[in-house]
Image (cartoon, rainbow, N blue to C red; front, top):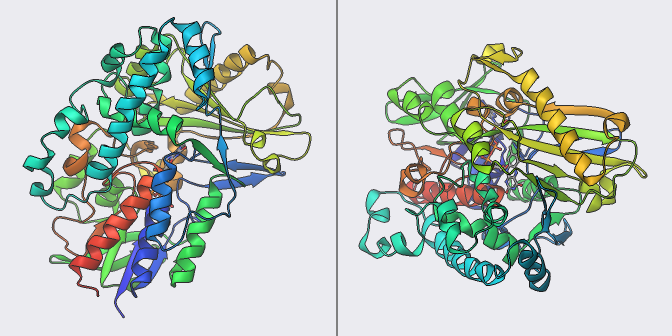
Length: 504
Ligand SMILES: Cc1cc2nc3c(=O)[nH]c(=O)nc-3n(C[C@H](O)[C@H](O)[C@H](O)COP(=O)(O)OP(=O)(O)OC[C@H]3O[C@@H](n4cnc5c(N)ncnc54)[C@H](O)[C@@H]3O)c2cc1C
């Protein structure tokens, strides 16, 4: 039986492992942490349960398709509920907008922002619908193994149909005048690690799918999806080894031969599939080549500072997903993306999972997560110096403390003035934590960003160019970041391996 080593039990790694095991391969997943999920992580404390990474189940059609490809339906367990309104947006001037699929409500709300703006939303949704469906078919679900898969005559109309050369924010002028509305339907670009002021207009697909297909929440939180995937993997015969650090991928000529572990063990395999962040794999696990430096110079997505709070009373005025958007929207992105800093008035996101699933907090108490986007680490730094909080001019302890004060300040607009007094405990993650926990290069939470030169054929492929039995999967590879996208990446990498290793 042919064997495969998978490095990392992130969403992409587990998905690929399951596809491969279902095709009869002996698959072992080696994971440095003590549980599966990677960035889609979970921890609990004193009866408070926290999703450490993703909190939004978006693009449900993609989940459905990927679960179907694994031979199952999007399972009833975990129980899914649609979150509607998806987000409650709060602007600097105190105005509020609840994004909902209830078009009557959207009409009333939008007209109060900018009279006559509702038809703009309908036209924007039409464009988003086109971008979503074409984007999924031609960019996301498509494997670009060779240049001619991408640069072909039949793809030429995509330049007009998907607006990759148009700027997303500028494109908004065709639909809205009010800057708050332009922000309300472009902030999702940050999920791609991009500023709307540089993102292609193609990404109108994100606000479209959120309104049209919904934002969902699995009972027990996003980690329930990891549990379902892990169960499927185990049923297919995948073996997991946790607390197991891969130190090196062993190569010989054009072949990967297996891995060397930090405990000195050597494991041989017919193929290796790396789910750890791709720039990290080139830098730390493979023999040094120019490719590693070339990747380090690529554009990385931003990072985030996350606060996880257990509080001793419920804050029922806090909806499930609240987004505070700043008037100086452009400056926000300039600070994060160009200056690698914390904006002076940051946009930020607050999640209250107990509004959706009361079991996420002890009765009469609350569980709150606040996420503040910041620039990534200016340099990856020395892995051995994880403890150093001040690196390359970025004082993360100080940046974190400032970010925390911004969250408290913003919550006051919802009448929440006493949160600090009711904190039972705080856990927080800075870019240093993201790097340390998951080996994410520069602490960048979404990996390589999704600008035009890092998309489609230009994004790192799912196989190494030289080592023909070394495959890649996950956020920094094709097709890109996001949980369902990582599942697509897992399937594409597995399909390629099956084709190329001629597994019947
Ligand atoms: C804060 C945050 C919020 C997010 N919000 C959302 C959201 O709401 N919705 C959404 O769809 N997506 C969201 N995402 C994105 C989503 O979480 C990721 O795109 C997806 O989980 C990436 O999966 P992956 O396959 O790349 O694997 P990763 O998550 O990168 O997992 C890779 C695994 O490899 C392991 N590893 C690394 N090095 C080694 C080694 N040397 N030896 C052994 N193991 C190793 C790591 O520990 C890790 O478990 C969010 C991400 C973050 C960080």
